[in-house]
Length: 338
Image 1 (tube, rainbow, N blue to C red):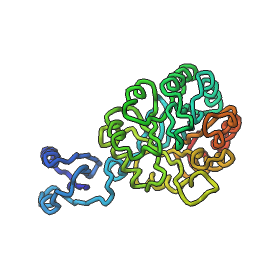
Image 2: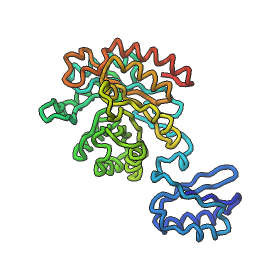
Image 3: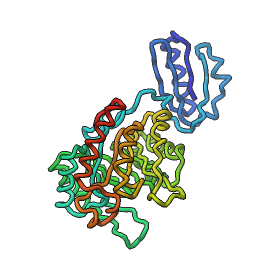
Image 4: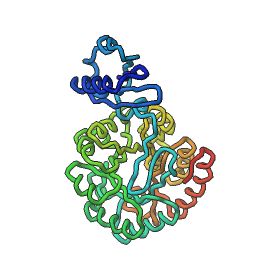
């Protein structure tokens, strides 16, 4: 619900209104302008009587918002959010953040080598899976804590912030201590207990869209995290499941302008999981930049045919560097930089 106050409403009256709404169990977000004051009410606003609110002489207008998400809604937060990941800023008009690294961490020497190549190519963060959610129980499940610590070594050597997927709330303390950007994978997008737990920390969260979830469901998952107090959320489109078999998933690039219009959150694209084919990654990455994405997260491996997981969708470092170089040209067209 949005409450618009009349121009020159006295400050004491504004304070009384805010307290009144808080007493009714709703959160009040205030947006101030030169000639107006607007309240964004978050919570169970269904119990609020519009007629009683309008009866106040200082109330100009009352508008109910159809969208169920409030904290992520651009109406309550007109400015783009810029999320700081250990010095790398994502969102707004900041440089497009390119994240690179292997699907799975395969050892300290391997991840340190890839990290240096990612940095040399122009990447600004290192991705790597230490805990792997796999469809088959017999597939490689990740190195666990050993993999996280190997990524920490890579960060020490290169200075690149690290991104890794958290699968369960019992590992949060480990991730808060070691990981710069905590990823919630597609399969956990609606793991509400995990989302609530992430709402209680301050570390930035990279929230991937679920395999078959709507945009609204995705934004509502972000709302869970933000409602807990953690506003540092970055959205990630990684393709959705359709009837198409030529690609691993179907990359929904239309979601970029939709997210930009409806929310203030940054959005990055994962063309690796979206396509499942390294030959398609460059084209989809460039298209994502043209669509207005704030970043890319791309799988990079020195020897994809030897990768412990998802080698078919991984770029070799030289291809990754070429992609970034081409991305710089596309970024200029849309008024951004890489």
